[in-house]
Length: 347
Figure (cartoon, one colour):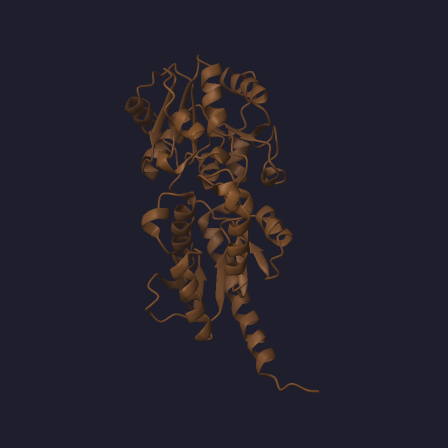
């Protein structure tokens, strides 16, 4: 079996969570020993498609005409498209119809979590949907004292500083407005946000938040995975105030690095991460203020070890075998569908 791992526009999505997920797929397939190509001109037996732009859609139909099975990876839902870019809420219904139309061409649809599977089913998608985590390369996310020291030196933090970090694009859904509000309200702690988006693409309130000048707030922009790993190692708390996710790869990374974790209490993490056992959860900025203080001052017990243990099942070495199983399912379903279509019709 040889897989076409197709993703359009990597120049634009490469620094996003989607870009990260695609790189994880490559590593997972390599670890599992599954042959793959990213060049649609090569020979292949099955197409695994990650994007829903124009070229992706045209190639999808070409592959269908060739009679090859298709696995469509549903990274996006209407819910996580809202509160992102300018006019995103207005076009969200049209966006939902388009992505569901694209996903419906898959013999099998993959999505990162049971939660996102539920959203797609509620939206009316009838294809077989298999939840498979985007995964995490645990061999890469190994902390050392040097990593933490490098982070603090680069961003001017002293050993005594207590640092709260977050990661995400500059979009409202990620909770960036709450992050800035908490930095204003908690001047005793340092806050740093990693990630970037052209400010011309976001509403005014997000631009103003990013341009906020506070002595305890930094926007570090996009950094390499190595630099981000240093931050996970050197910060005192990973705060993830996102309102909606299909998984949240950066949360997996922070858990793998043994960080203290504070997240918003949203449905996607209801069953997978237990409040007070693996992570701490809050709903309002008042909750977050209390929990940030409790975690950083040592008034709340550390959950690092339990959170780190929870993530082991999502190592890329496990994800590769899950992808193989999904591919085999797609091949079998495709064969069955062809048999039904070619069977003589009886009156």
